[in-house]
Length: 308
Image (cartoon, rainbow, N blue to C red; front, side):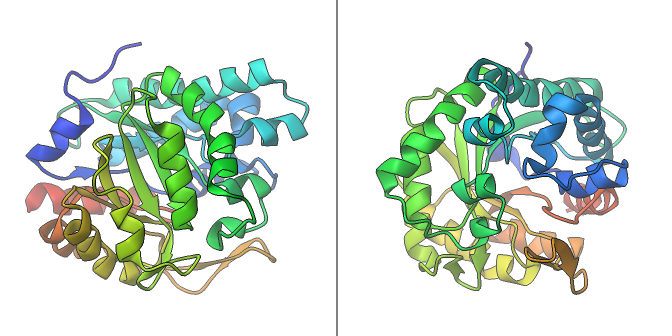
């Protein structure tokens, strides 16, 4: 399996890179039914071509980093559906292969020359529960217990050869500590990205303290936020840069709010690619969108990055 000739960390030193947008909304736009506890991870087994098509749509829109469809892919979640450990490992590997195929197909494409990198998504423990608890944290598990949960799939994803691991949508600083511990020694750089409310994690810890966990960890190539209100991202980018001195990653939602009970989105979209300049000036080097931010918005964002 080939990889881009330059490391992602080195690329960040040269300037900002555009991330993709929400995978689930693009899959739904392609006609996929995601009303399942495994969410988009179901398609790794049932219809992998849809995932590759979604990755391709974002790369063609100008994304230079594609995040895999493994956010909700866990050994425990697959086991609940009767998928054995060996097959689950193969599905985790497939998530990286699908994104890599899309990356190689579109590298140097019409919206900006250069390589396209792949980040393997590692979602929080709450994503496996499929009950909205990834937006609360505080699962009643210790840091050691959470590390034991995360380590096997981190190892499986790292073995598949991504350019980075995206430890993303993390609601709780304790879980962040667990994920960093689980990723130590895996041989792949990581970024750490919290889901936040204002200037705290979803679990209520100050962002300054949460970001500080990664400040001295060489394996961490970027720190920041995702799956949050676009307005909350403004101050978070500044805090992450100030506390860690590392490149900042930022990819908020559209601004609509997820109702876990009704399993639907409410409110209006407030995502504005015009925010990119302020984020970049504050230290953001990985910039994209999360839920409900599609290829059209990513294309607008990529144009802003290219022109500034």
